[in-house]
Amino acid sequence: MKRTAVLSPRGGSIELQDLASRGRLIAGQRVGLRRFRRKVARRTRWVPACVALLLLAGGAWHGAVLGTAWAARSPRFAVTAVDVAGQSRLTRDEILAAADIAPGENLLMLDPRGVVARLEALPLVRHAEVIRSFPNRVTLVVEERRPFTVVNAGGLHWIDEEGVDLGVESRAVALGIPVLSGLGPDDLRARGRAAAASERVGVGLSLVRLLLRGRTSLLGQISEIDVSRAEGPVLYMLDGIEVRLGKDEWDARLGRLQGVLAQLAAAGETPISIDLRFRGQVVLRTPMK
Image 1 (cartoon, rainbow, N blue to C red):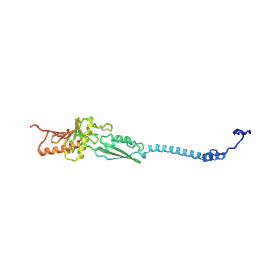
Image 2 (image 1 turned 120 degrees about the vertical axis):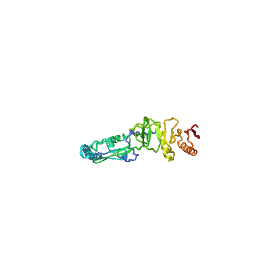
Image 3 (image 1 turned 30 degrees about the vertical axis):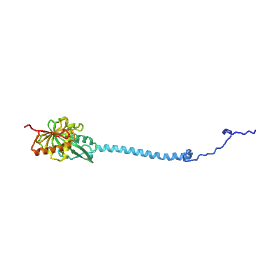
Image 4 (image 1 turned 180 degrees about the vertical axis):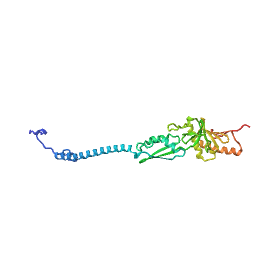
């Protein structure tokens, strides 16, 4: 029997054929010495440029610091004029005193947020804005709170539509909307911005807004709205009638009240009270004869 030899890789040098395709990634894995030198040369060209840019940036930063320091001390940027706009009830002197901008204060060093905070701490200021006009002028723009109605809270106070206390009213005033009563000083929103008006103030303001939107004669017939009772606000009419309105569905109840008042006026009757708290019913209390 004839023997055949089995060749192994160790048995002889056999050159194996490269079956893989030489793509870009494979071809670029080996870098010759000449190619390596070219790469290093290209990269070293950027070093002087990077150093120059760093030096330029450092010089610009240093110049900006020196420029800012000069501007902060320069009399050219000292505030010489403060204008005031938007005020009606507040005087110019009151606004300037609250802003507390020192004469000659540097315009760049002025703190606009601090000025705004001091202005908005005034009870009559709803919003304030500070406009700096270079080189030396400041404009203070204020939006004042508008008086909405008077509340009886240990004295007559004007409040705005957010329930902010605008101060005590000591003069006689003619109002076209009802006075809110049944409140105390703690119910009103503080003169700052942190505290909020009480829920009872919110009830009264909501009812007044509803009456204003209705644009009916009913608004002129109500002199006072008592918001102190848990069962809902109580209306006091100019002719002395007490109206218990209830806690909800005010729009429908006010429409019913207007109809009842028209019927009573036609009949020549004036009840002591009208109770609208019961759904679908109107309870009248008449004077005893």
